[in-house]
Amino acid sequence: MAKAKHTKETYIDWYRLMLLIRRFEEKSAQMYGQNKIRGFCHLYIGQEAVVAGMVSAKQKGDKVITAYRDHGHALAMGIPANAVMAELFGRIDGCSKGKGGSMHMFSKEHDFFGGHGIVGGQIPLGAGIALAEQYNGTDNVCFCYMGDGAVRQGALHETFNMAMVWNLPVVFICENNNYAMGTSVERTTNVLDIYKIASGFDMPAEQVDGMSCEAVHESMERAAKRGREGKGPTFVELKTYRYRGHSMSDPAKYRTKDEVIEYQKIDPIEVVKETILKNKYMTQKELDAMDEEIEKEVADSVEFADNSPFPDASELYTDVYETEYPFIVEPSNEIIFS
Image 1 (cartoon, one colour):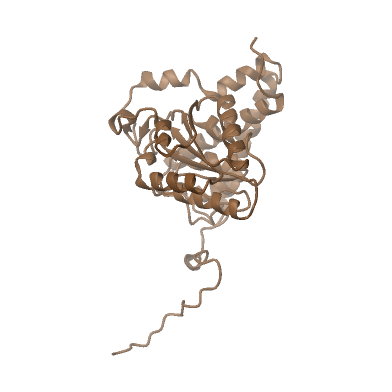
Image 2 (image 1 turned 90 degrees about the vertical axis):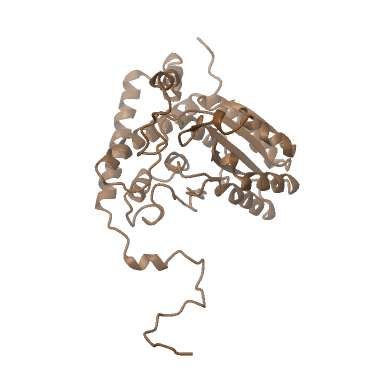
């Protein structure tokens, strides 16, 4: 039996978090089919180890920002399932008051800065968050996630340059699931090892198995340590895989069923479960009980979301400016001729 690399508690935490994300996303797909969730909806099924390994490596106060496939990140950062599901339903009790939906989850309380629908739009913001931490003299870092499609955006190169010049405490993380929507990495670049992009900026970088909680955790620890010690940014390419299509409307006909099956053989949840059982950290009966508990938590989140009201129309005018903005005036019926 291979010796476990981390503590019993760490493996159990990884398993519970990944199972919560998996069950939550499965239920989200079901709710989308029932028209409870509308608009775009990008599921995280298969990529759970990417956030599980990060959360176990981060410290309190670290910030996280990501793109539109953000349900898993929101749950990993501690936002309650109730608030995430209510946001998916577009209800007032959602973490973004029902105004963000699937792609725009936010919670300042949980140090989670989105959820961004514009491809690559979060990358400069991640550097900005890191700049704020540097300016305030903390030892916090920002974990800035992106997909393999976002690395083609010009904003990434501008941000990488600035992050290196200013020595920012930011960990740039590419979740490389092989497809930018339906376009494979091979069709968009001749640099198939995405982490090598960072070499043009002399930025430390590495490629890591994103299906392994252990590998993700260790890479995040290394990168975060570098940032905390004032040694600047790191670029980490996590090789992962999504089992579902790009979004709920994507049948994923650009890949074979055999390809999906091969990745499911190294499913991160099953790998961690095997470690837990082999090391006798929990029994199968205890794991089954945990699964039942999580399924109830997810079911309760659906009930909570269903019972939450839609935002009032007046909410269109709230959360736009941080403070009262003096140039907003009440609309007038008076017609002015000049």
